[in-house]
Image (tube, rainbow over all chains, first blue to last red; front, side, top):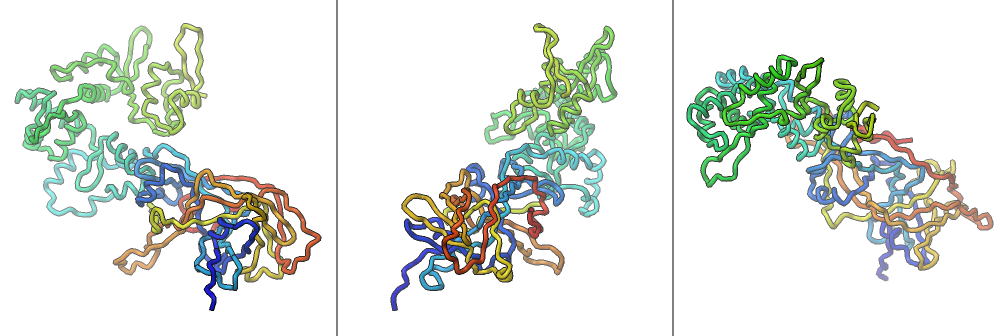
Length: 388
Length: 154
C-alpha cells in the first residue's frame, strides 16, 4: 500500500497554498455546534504577561469589562464587521480523510474581534469601598478583648482577593492605589484608618520624641513602635504611622530601620486638623497651624498646594480645606467638581488639582485642552480656565 | 469577578489558525440548509507564484491577497472549570476561564467585486454570494458577554 503523502489540511493548507494549486473550503463537521471563539488583538506589550498566565478580565457582570496585565489596564472594545470572517483552525487529522483532496474547514464565522485600549485604572471604587469601614480606635480596643475572630465582624471588609475581584485595575495599579490611600492590611483585610485615630498616634509619637529626645529625622523603628505599643496602640498601626508620615532612611545596617518624618506630610495633617472646623481667616489659620507644628519643623503655605484654597473676601484672605485626594479620579468628573467649587481657575492653583490625573495618551496640557476653556483677558494677564 | 486568561498551549507552541475573509454574506441554498456541516463553501486557488488568490463560491469568483495582520489575533475559547472539593453546591459554581487556543497572523482577504462566472457549469450550485461593501460598527462589551456567549452581534 502506498504511503499517503502528507497533504495539508486546515489552517496550514490555507496559509501554504502552493502556486497552481487549490483547496476546498468547507463547513466543519462541528460548525455551529460549539460556543463561539473570541478573537483578541494582541499588543506586543501584553504578550509576556499572556505567556506567564498573568492576564485577567476584571469587572462585575454589569460593568464594562477591562483586561488587566500585571501592571496595566485596558478597556476592551468589540469591533464588529459585516464582512464574513471564516475562522479556520489547524487540522485535527494529519492526513486527509477522503482521498487526496486538500480541505480546509471553517469552524465558525466570527462576528468581529476585540481591541484593547490602554486606560486609567478605575480606582474610585476602591476609595468608596474602604471608606465604608475605616479602622477606628474603637475597633482597636475591641480587638484586644476579642479572643475568637467572629465572622460577623468581618462583613463588608475586603481581603486582597476581594479587591482584585471588585476593582477594575491591574495588581500593580491596585497596590499603588492602596498606597495612595495610606491603606493598611490588618488581619488579612485592607483598611483605611480613621483620620482622627491616625492623628492620635502621630501626636503620641511626637510627644514620645520629645520625652525621649529623639531626632525626628533619625527615628529608630523599634524604639518608636515599642513606645507606641506601650501606650496602647496596636503594633501594626504604630508601624503604619511611621509609614504614613515618614520615610525609611537607607542607613539600616542589619539593625532596626531608621525613619525620618516627612515635614510636608506632617504639616498637611495638622493643616487638615485645623481646617476641619471650616474656613477661616488666613491669619488665624497660620497662627493655629504653626502652633501645632513640631519644633524643628518648618511649615510654609506652599506645602498646602492641592490641599487648601485661599480666597480674597473683601480685604481679607480666607482659607479652606480642599484636598486633591478627595476628588474623583475620572477626568470628566474631576473637572466637573473643580468647576463647581470655583467657576474660574488660574493655572497656578489648577495644576495642583490635576497633577495626579493619569490618562494614557493625554498630557496635562491635553487634559486642559479637552476639558476646559482657556481665556486670557490681556496679554499680560494670567490665563484663566473655565468649564467647557 | 475575575476571568483568567490562560495559554495552555504554551509560548511557542501556539497553533496558527487562519482566516478567509470576504465582503458580504455567504448564503446557503434552501435545499441545503439543514446540515451544512461538511458542505463545501467554495474553492480557494492560488493561480501563480504571486500571493494572489481566488475564491470561487457558487458562480462567483473573488480575487484576494494574503495579508499579514498588523496586530496578531489570539483565538480564545471559554472554559468552565468546576472547583475541586465542590460541596455539592449545584448551581454555577464553576469558574469561567478563557483559554488561548491559537493565534492568527495572516488572513486571506477578498475585497474586490465578485466576478460572475456565468459561462461555467457548476454541479454543486449550493451557494450564492451576497456581496456588499463592508461596514464597521463598534460598541463596548459587558462582562456578562463572556459568561453567556450565545448572544451574537447583529
